[in-house]
Length: 522
Image 1 (cartoon, rainbow, N blue to C red):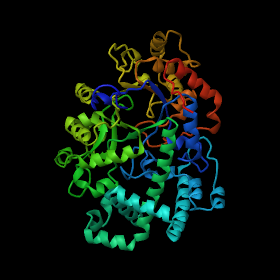
Image 2 (cartoon, rainbow, N blue to C red):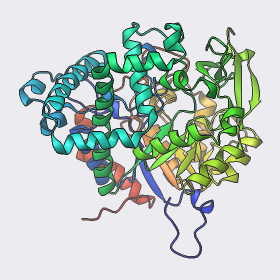
Image 3 (spheres, rainbow, N blue to C red):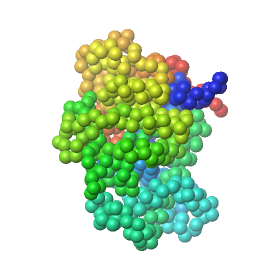
Image 4 (tube, helix red, strand yellow):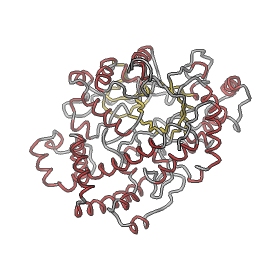
């Protein structure tokens, strides 16, 4: 990720992973929190300190985009590709900013047990943000208000589009935008100007919430960077049909005349589902995007790199070729492969941003063109140990003997079962025997987490990321997400007592043993 100190700087060469480091995968929502959900406040800072004590150099999180109950609060399904998630805002920092009374905040603290309480967390944030906005508008504090105006100027047109979209969603009882009156559905200029006058305060409130999110996230990222921790983010390839992005820019997507989807994104039958997956998201009009230099994608990447130090490109194979499912299909089996933008998109990206640090999520049904695209731009790919022992294929990319240096190694991702749950529910005798042979010792439920983590650390992959659940040796009840299901996901929450000195010492000991430790600087 850093420029070489010797010779001529080569941006293509520099896209490989240059560190021999380690990190932990834990989304913000899973942190211990005082208000029903993990946020960017005290709990996040404590986790940064835990990472430092544990010799880690990366904190991987899931997308930060705004989520909602309609889509089960999935961070991969959002009303906006640009807007941050208000649920991650820390109410206590509104107090320190002078925008809320401490007594109001203190009275709303509660423990949500082992799972995130999204509904109550939403109500609390809405209440606090409304109250703080009232004080913000009345006082118009010079320093904060000037920063707010600068934020609006710097964010460009997406913020106005998102604010308009949000207010219209509220006005029409959360109906999908294609069901709005035609003048709003088709973004009639006169109608939008009238909207701006009628709902001026509500539109400004939406912008204010995004401003507060930006302030708090930037503060956390700066703290992490000062502590030597880089934030490893994630960007979904697709966006919701019911989103500000598709509403404001229908020409960027494959839609019918009435703005409904012509087809939808997904994947064919795979490891997770024998019928494949239908994602309910529109496909991009790549031909049109190419004609305008992929500008929307460049703006989207720029926005994400304001949040992150390194970025995972979710469903990277979709840039080489994507699975197109005709709208109305019963299963994803009815889809077909279509050629993606490939090299032309990444040429545009690296012309604008010569050394953006990406990781390609090259999982699933990967063919030669996907490998060629990743290798053309020297992007690190992913290796997942749970996929490495399911058969006797000597060329299995996910077996540790086939890892490559320019890769990020995982025991599992947010879509996998936890290691313990996988071992209990998804392995058989032959799989366990293959792991035992590779590890050089008999694998059981007592040592599977330790030994699989050791195999990842021992590998040639330049970076290793371990889900927090695997360090804690938690079972399937702590799984973050089960693909192709809509209930019971994104709920897992870390207990405050888990972040103890013993675990930190145990992680650091292994990290140091395999020369992946981040040496702290006092």
